[in-house]
Length: 132
Length: 187
Image (cartoon, rainbow over all chains, first blue to last red; front, side, top):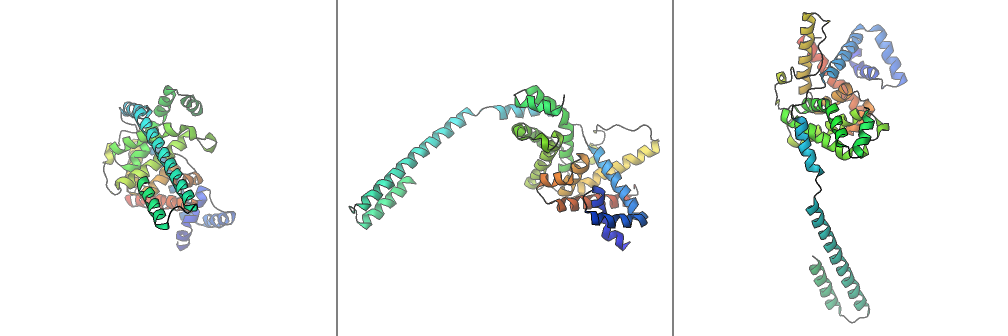
C-alpha cells in the first residue's frame, strides 16, 4: 500500500506516456502484482473520458452578433489617432535634432576657449531646461 | 472545408471564412471559458476576446506546430488565466452548475438502461462540480489535456511552465477528482 502511494505519480506519468525506460520497468513490475493500482489506472482513464465529454457547451444565442460588433470596432482604422501620433513623432524628432545641434555648437565654442567654465556650465543647464 | 483553407481565406480578407471558423469553434471556446471562469457573462466576454485575438494573430498561426483547434484552446486558456488574475475571482462560485445542465451539445447514449444513464449523469454532474473547485492551473491542465487532447509538452509550452509542473498538476487534479468521486460513491 505504501509502495503504491509512492509510485502513484510515476504510474500516472506512465499512463500519460512520459516516463523513462528504467522508470517504466519499475512501474510495469509493480502493476504485475498490484490489482489496486490497476483499478486506479482504469478510474483515471474514465475521469479523462468524462472531462472530454464536458466540452463543448452551447454558446449563447447572441454570441455571433456581439462578436461581429466587437469585430467592427477593432477593424476601424483609427485615422485621427494615427495622424496625431505621427505629428507628435515629427515634433519630437525636430526638437531632438535642434537640441543635439545646440550641444554640438556649444562644445565647439568651448574648445576654442571663448567661454569661461562658469558660462559653459550655465549654458549647458539652460539647454537642458530648454529641452525638458 | 478544412480549417487551413478557411485560415488561408481569412488572411486574404474573407470575413465569411472567419465567421465559419467562429461558428466551428465557438462552443468549445465558450465551454473552456465557462469551466475556467465559472461566470457566464465573463466567459462570453473572454470567448469573444479569444476570437478577436485569433483574428489579430492569425498570421502568426503555424499549422506545423499543431492543429488550429489546439491553438485556439491554448489562447482561450491563457486569456482565462489572465482574467482570473485580474479579477481575482477564484474561489467564488458565481454560477450554479445546474445552469449548465441541458446546455451541452453532447448526445445521450440510449443503449444504457435508465439506471445506468442516471448514474452516468450523476457522475458527470459531480465531476463538473469538482472541476470547478480545483485550482485554476490544475483545471486548465485537465481541460487542455483531456478536453482538447493537447500533449503534456504542448501544455507546458502553452502555459510557459516546465513539463514536470504540468505532470504534477495533471496528477494532482486527476487524483483529487478520483478520490472525491470515490467518497461520493460514484466511482
